[in-house]
Length: 237
Image (cartoon, rainbow, N blue to C red):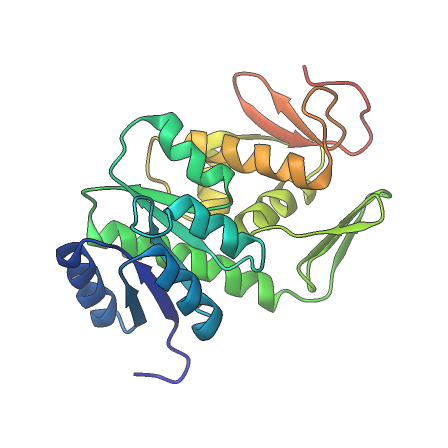
């Protein structure tokens, strides 16, 4: 095991699933911390400071939603949620709580690895950025410091939210389709995940104080996607 191997907190109450995922991750040279319930997940997160969390939604002692909310109160560590629920709205709940991604059971281990690699590459890329600031007056994006200051206050964004904002803000006025944003922000091109971007936009707007009814920075282009325009005061078109 290399010294820079990434640590993953695996939270899954089904032993068969937990053991199988752990074995697959370890074959990919990740350090895995397996736990079976929500309370153990919170304790392990605080003690181990993992690089990424794989989190089942349905857990004993403390639900996956509660665990996600607790982690987000303290950290922007990437979270991939696992869910057996197939309804889109059920899956969107996890994203709105701050998860970076989700996978539906049963899932392909290869796809899970692809998601993990994409998220960790995104985090590493953000950490390695050279000093650069995008200054649009009442919103400032510090790329090297991974900070966003909106109306004078620093905002706590997840890695996905920060990548989404910087992608849009680097090309003000450009319209990005949801598919383009999935590829650029999430780092993969699997079909059917456009709603994931909608959830991240909703969370991002809430955190930076961008009223969706009178969009100041992130504008919805109906039927297409989103654009960043710090100068336009009116709502979307």
